[in-house]
Image (tube, rainbow, N blue to C red; front, side, top):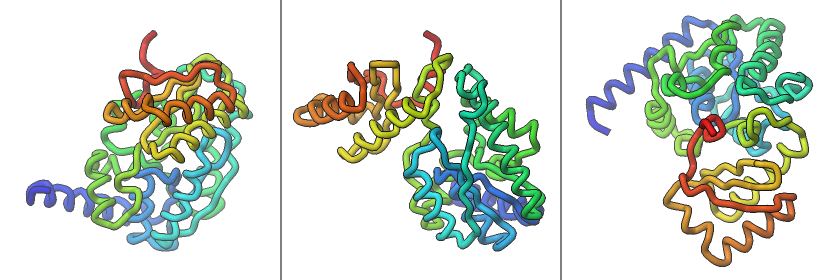
Length: 273
């Protein structure tokens, strides 16, 4: 990192600390991902016991993320709670429309706002950073409407800033691949069910156990479409990996197992047909 880049990063980090200090206390939605983990770590340093990290659990979330969130909260020395997320109880979320994320976040953020009130914390925050603004994120609209703060974005931090500062602070998440809720693996307009979401989670867990890290398994009914970084495409079709993947995903209920030749990309389910 160049001196100029390092100085810019430190200015943003100091701005983040000042924003958090001015907030005085907050509840943070901690997914265990790169962004929210950094926010919790810095907030713990600035505000101590005036921070509560909350991790939602339910069929939309990878169980592995819960373990990572617990690790991060312990590292930051902040209070941590798990809550049951009941987004699938909402008929509109279960119907999975193109703006599903908006409705899903509305449900989750209302739970967090209620909890923050009970805990006597003036703010609820999430891990959005500047680069998120250019992505298809209907959930960001819900956050704005409900007064959910985004201190990383307010401090002018990009995704690369978040990774660089996380590495500097010794966070184990600094180079973790981006995660997204399991609903993003199912085409819009197709009902979200616990069974289908569980199948996606099991498929991705199986591939990670085979040595793959950054990946998505998109569920098109009987067809699994696997996305990995372009440099890992060849590994998927080599023996015995090809056979292991095919056999395991068929055990989980997929009839066809395919590899997406365009590789891993965020929001591929949002691309026009």
